[in-house]
Every structure is written in structure tokens, then in C-alpha cells.
Length: 578
Image 1 (cartoon, rainbow, N blue to C red):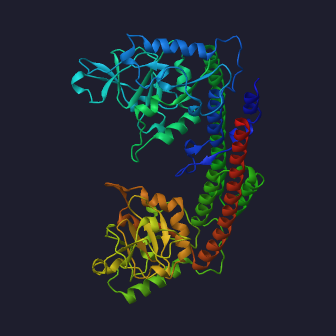
Image 2 (image 1 turned 90 degrees about the vertical axis):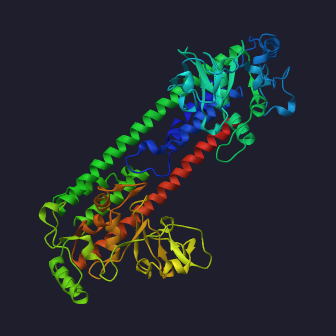
Image 3 (image 1 turned 30 degrees about the horizontal axis):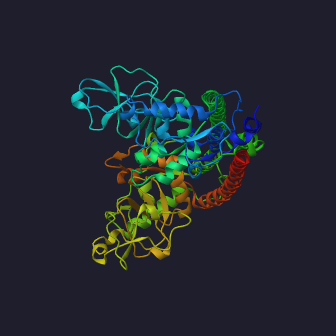
């Protein structure tokens, strides 16, 4: 076993343990986790392969210098000249163009030396069209080609390919749309002009070419050469002039075999890791469900004791911690997080007094009737009541959508709040954008005073923020609605309530889809809302704050662990590259 292979195998725990979460990944979305260590391992395997460190050199192999002479002859054949890139230089590359020291018996050549193309043709009959979308990037295979009639041929359908041809997308090459044509397609295949074509000469293995094209050194070369922003690309001169490390033909085959063997190990490691993540998520989900389904405080305490014993093991991923946060909120809104106290004034008394006060201040205000039993999502403690969300809003400041859309920034104008500005704990001192005072004057009803709860209702539905006092006088975009809780409800309780999955699902189950998903204002106003006695609201908020702080500590510790695991994977990689 080579030192490189031993390094891979001996540190499997490091490779599988380095995991990071991609943006937007949520609980139950194990597929959105980046297996950082395993991807690092795949990259390292290719890097070691193309540097001649993966398999031993055999002195009995015909050296690549002899292979290079054969390639020169094939390039020079009259029948091949029109299919060989004009960038194919005779002989090897000068020392200055060699990107690293290759083993004895290898040669540096440019890509143009490796093979030829098959020319171009305008389709005259049905054909198999291979475009960028036909490529399985991970497997390096053509999986979804189209069968087109000649009359439907795109202008880019021009390049002839055959079984054994390597195709490389020179547009957005970082996507690695690279493949070997491994089938005899019927009708005849034609590829898009987005591809560079390399059909290997005798003595060059297409599978080896493919692996070099995906290796870190080649990707870095392309990255340094490409131009453009929206659609970066590399031109033919840069691509076919790229330096390429060429081993003896027999060693190419050994390298491919060993890479395949190690990549299969990576596949098994990835499968095992993802299955472990999925099983862990399921276990956490089922255990947390027992908390929510607890029948009484004794039952809850017993269920919690089973979790508490394995707390550090269970809550060792961002997904599991997020699930714990949601369980805390679910217990809170169901009246199971803190005990009910006999001397608390029942919510019903509080609500009746509040209704009288509202009608006295505004006789035209219409209060919604009690939530009928058929519309009550679950049973509440006896001192709680179900109320339509709208009844909990200050009558002077009804729930209101913004109606303005972002336009050009007006320096010195009225601050303009967009969804990107929303944050519960860390909002900016002032929004980035401003609008003309003359426009703001038309929409006084959505002007802020500071302290309002703001919620995304278009696109980023449910995103929450609190307007700081520095936003007083600002106006809101149409993607936002303003919520001002009345004095009968604790504002922090409303904030936690709105972050619960129960309320989020309540709002979004009937989301209208226009150009973007959009919340119906009526849906928000009529949402059945669990209201505890005011004293219990305060106890709930205190307990949720305490438990969420513990979740924050778990997350911080986890992030430190993830960074250590990534650094370990990086360190092992650096050692292997020495």
C-alpha cells in the first residue's frame, strides 16, 4: 500500500467527520449538507494521481518520452492534420510551463497533443444532441441526450463526437461538465460548440484524461485563464495549450484503476455518513415528538429524562439543534413548557377586559368572535384561550402591508425597509435604501414609529424583524407587513409564537403563488392563536429565552467542533501534498 493510500485509509474518521451545512439547509435536509472532508478526500485522490504519487512507477514501463514520439507522428499524419488542434506543439513542454515536478518516465505535453477532434457538421437528418444539460457531472457520463430532427437543430449543434471522445465544457467550466462518450449513440451524436473535443490518440487513455481534467491543478489552471462574469469561459488557445502531465500508457491504466477503487471507497463512506445522518435525524425527531405529545407534566419529565441522558450525542448537529429549538417553541405554544398557576388571571378575563377597552377607544372596531371548536388546532390548558390573531393587535395600528417597491436610492431621503434589513436581534441602525419624502407622504399608514414587529409576506415568507427606534419615520416595502401587538399580549411572546412551526404552518398552508409566494393578509388576521394568561406569558418568555441561550451555546460549540474537523481534513491534505 502506497503512503498516499495509507494516509487516506488511516484517517477515514477525519474525512467523514468534517461536515458543514450549506446555506438554506434545514432540519431533515441531510442532502443539503456538504460532506466537506469526503469532498476534500476526492480532490486529494485526483491530485495525488496526476502527480504520480498514487501508484508506484514501474521501470519496465515504456517511458512517456517514447509515447510522445508516437503522438507527434499521429499529429503529423496527413489524414489527421485537419482534425488536430493548431496548438499542438511538437515534443514536450519547456520547463517554464511545467506546473510541478512529474516522476521520472513522465512527460509534460499540452492538451492538444493528446488527441484530435472529428470536425463539425450541420445536421441533415435526425441526430443525438449532446449539450451541457446532458451531462451527469458527478459520474462524468452522458445520461440525457436529446433526439432531434435536423430542422430543430440549435445553431450550436455542430461538433461530431464518437465513442471514446472526451468532451469538456469551456463555458462555466467550474461546473465540471466533463464526460467521456461511452456509448455508440443511434442516431449519430453531435455535441454543442460549448464543448472542447479530445478524441485520444493511441497510447492515451480517455479515462486518464477525464480524471486530469477534474483534478485540482487543472481546475486551478482553468480558473486563472477564464474570462467573463456571468458566463466565464476559457478559449481554445488556453484550453488546448494547457499543460498536461503524461505518464507511460501502462501507468495511466494503473492510475485509473486505483482512482476508481478509492472513489468507490469515498462513495461507500459518503453513503454510510449520509445514512448515519438520516438515522440520527429520525431518532432526534421521534424523541422530541414524545415531548410534544406528553400528556402531563409527569409524562413530560419522564420523556425529557430519556433525552437528557444522551443530550450531547443527540444534539450534535445544526439540524438536531434546530429541531430542539422548534420543540421548545412547540411546547411553549401548547402550554407545556411552564406550569399553570392557580392565582394567574385566566386569559378569558383578560381578553374580555381588553375587548371592552378597545371598543371604548374605537366603537367602529370589529372584533372577531371566539374561535369555534372545529377550528381549534389542539387542546389548550383550561386557563388559555384560542383567539384570532387580529384581536391581539393594537386597534390604532392594524396589520398592514407595505405597498412600495424598491426603486433608486435617494440619499438623504426617508429610510426604506426591505426584507434584507429584517433582523430580530441585530438590525442595522438604518436601512441601506431611502425614498423620496414626496412618495413617503402618500403612505403614512405604513410609516414606522419604532418597536414594530415586521414580517416578510412575499418571497421570504415568515422572515421576522423588530424595528429599532432608529427606524422611526421609515417606511416599509410591499414584501413586508407590520404587526403591533396590543398591551394584553407580551411582545416577546408574540415574537417566539411567530417563530414557531405551528404559526408558520398556519400562515403558509394557503399561500397564494403569484410571481412569488405571497401571504394573504386575511390568513394572518384570522389565524387561530393560543393565548395564555399574561403572567404565564412572562414565564414562558423567560423560559424560552433561557433555553434558546442554551441552544445558542450548543450551536457555538458545534461550530467550533466543525472548524476543528475541517482544519484536521485540511492538515491531512497538506501533509499528503508534501
